[in-house]
Length: 258
Image (cartoon, rainbow, N blue to C red; front, side, top):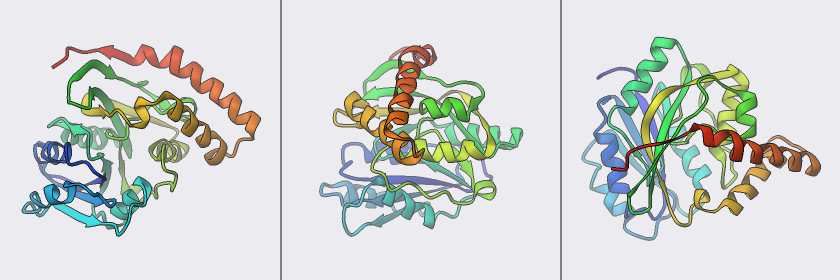
């Protein structure tokens, strides 16, 4: 399928075990009008040499930062280089299903929506399916997003013609949540493509694997991004925990492990 160019933003750092599968999942897209901008954040393993094997495809671009600067810096570098009408995100250890871009672009154009996302599935570090699909409200509001990040980073896509290029926060974690909040401030509500189109890898040392680290970074979103007081941030965290333990589980569906 041909259409508007989609820029895929991929920061990489020491992802030699996963990057090949990640890139291949892009090459397997049924929607072929894309560019993949990989910005390596100072990898010290074979990540860069593996990426270079794919550069025979002119749609794949590699840029290397002089030193490790964090995913925010890497993503912002890629965004400045992006030429696409649409900007999407895929980290160097995650995967897209073959019809991901096609279904999302068709969804956005048919509904005249400048932003959308989708459901996604989870695998462990070795690639084993964990048997669940992460869903989201069918009409996501800013208020809902305030209490928890319903948008998987690997599923979000936005229209540059509507928003312009959105700079990523310099914070080390939860940059995607803050970006989606800025988007929902402008459009008020967003609809997901109601099916699983991506696969999220939960690594042993990732933020998703450490609930304590996750809570600390979420607190910083309320404190630094929303400019809440210490007491206000604590109250917001209580709301976050309520959403995380009592509302979000209703949107996690069992799937058949592959």
